[in-house]
Length: 580
Image (tube, rainbow, N blue to C red; front, side, top):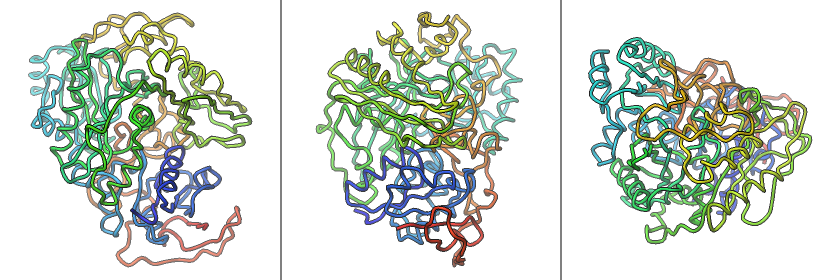
């Protein structure tokens, strides 16, 4: 096992990894921006390094500064958490070149799976079912029209380099496809530096089901069952549960087994998630593979008893996988709700501020993952996730009742601060959700229904567009171009608050997406997310490449927090402050 691990993230996931390291006797280094200088992970870390100002591009996306911080502190490995650099193949390569273990899959695996077209081809070869459509990218509009005619409308045009809800356009007729094709390619070029696209059948009102996997790179792997993440708004997950409800056991087994076969076929290492859309006939369709820890991993831990972060650390340290498939037993039901600092009454606009009161719930089988505390200032610079409340019960009804009770106890208050708790509780009481009949269209139907009314019944999840018009309009991506459903960016494209990743794919709200490529090579996903929002290639301003022979610069200024100044990270980059 490692002696010291650097945590290249913030918020609740930084705290989660820190606690796992402490339980394994591993010392921790937490890097942080100036905005997070007084955060709970910084308070609890063995060592801290300030790597830059609040802007993500100059701190949490600054690969050079993070690597140099690891070198200065003697860390042996880097845990990227989720979002930010967690799925950046270039960052993983930089770590390896500097003698650091990146806690995640090999760079070449991440690079292949980050390209949706390549990932689809690899998974198709491994026998995973794909939505009807093109396996390869389509260079001309004529090719796109041909594929669309074969699979039938509606179709969805997707950017090969996209992710997390960005770079997607739903089209309902051949007449509208040429314009949508051109617009999607142009948007993909701007956002990701790659205009390649492909077309597949659009599955409206399907279920979003994912499978947690663990692999050790020696050909050993296990799956930890399924999770349902269908309750989402514009690809922003709100509620997750394990196992996925109301599906036949044979369907759940099929999804889990094919997911594990797929990741083993490409040499995956570490913790990952294979995502599927499941239609009304319970046919699974491969979506993508996430090469990192997921926001919703607690529900899997609660039904399996497996500490996913512990296993990540053991695998990265070279320990053969400690679990066999027959060791995995699913017990009961776990449900998690995300508590975001957003105002549902203002289209989920971010509502950050200082927390005058903060009292998380307790009680039996109730887990709260949060970096919040009374007096904490929720920053407008990062994702809006403040807490995750997860509960366990022997059955689903009991788990839903327990979660509703826990959310009712959660006290969060401060000037201008609003949370998603009231809306999540409304979802928990919706008849379709209670019966396990919900799909990815549930939240939009609830928002369209009169206040207090249940959502209309969903249309059949058989690939047809919903009758109520809740499918995306022709030529649109998610209406605001927002980031993934796994907690890496606010639902409305506003400023984030917790560190799961920037709002628009790179940095504070409103900044142009930028993709880290600190070694001058291909860009990787900039901030990740459930995929990850991948942004355009190019070096980050103020983030020079790691020099072959670093030059250290001592800064004599006094730190406002009273800490001792050490060398800058790196010489031409932002000031770093280190505390033991």
